[in-house]
Amino acid sequence: SREKEMARLLSAIASALETQPFLLGESLSAADIAVGSILAYMTLLVKLSYEGYPAIEAYLERLTSRPAFHKSIGARSSH
Image (cartoon, rainbow, N blue to C red):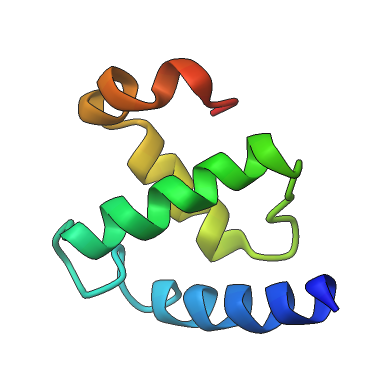
């Protein structure tokens, strides 16, 4: 089911973000742009909530507070 698959994927992402600020470590990378934008869009497209995943919520806050985010997709995001 979608719920089971999302829990598996979100748990893996959250696990990585519990020990570092970005997916690949201390610095923003192309992986963060790709994954972060999808995570942000999912809150709009399917009203996905990251409740229960505080590391993902904090990650999205870090990404969506960046000026480049606002210039690209910020106007369409709920963040």
